[in-house]
Image: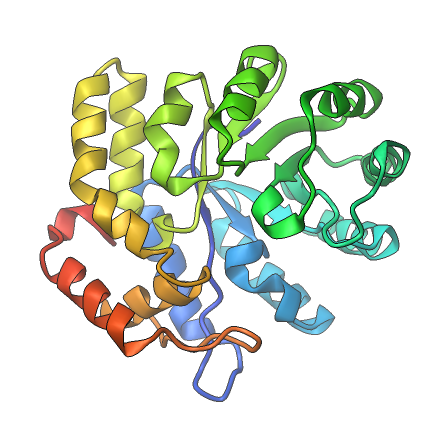
Length: 294
């Protein structure tokens, strides 16, 4: 279902906060030119939590019209409210995505029965589900025993985007499930490690800027050139880490602004990148080979 490099697409905004569709089109085409295998629309990097229902629909119409037949499309529909998640997932059906990305409900910290029922109801809509596990944002870490019950109860879950930094948990999960579903890297700075434990690909925020690098790393690794893949990763590692000097997608959007793709505007409660971190990013971009970025 989900193999290769998927860009978790950012949403360019004009200085007044409106969606910048001209910049969005430019970013989409640059990603396609870099050879990405797919896109996640309306994920965390898109600042989906700050978008209105009308803006979500407009963005999906705009992007899918330009991507259909050219790449796979996953749409983020998960929230911490089951009713809202169901509504967003039904709305996504109209755009015929390859699947929906559904984060484990944040803040509420559901128990096992609630977690299973949440995903079971989403599954009844019929779209393949990518379960998004990111304890650092949600406050919910799903233990292996709970995950087993969840996956057994909800067979519509076809992939997991794993963004836990607990590599013991990550490895345990990979050993158990990579033969059963697609296990996807959600941590840009651990991409080679995930590939080494049989991850099928990556959903990447940093790929907004460094898509050519991620595609090359993936292709090298899959062709058996693992040492070369890691060497390339190491050469761009500082730039990948810089994407997270502050909360995603603030640094990614600042980088895109410096490369002429869009403005750096983010929506509150996110704010602009500090002057200190902008200076660090500028220095890194200056020494980045143009072939490694869009």
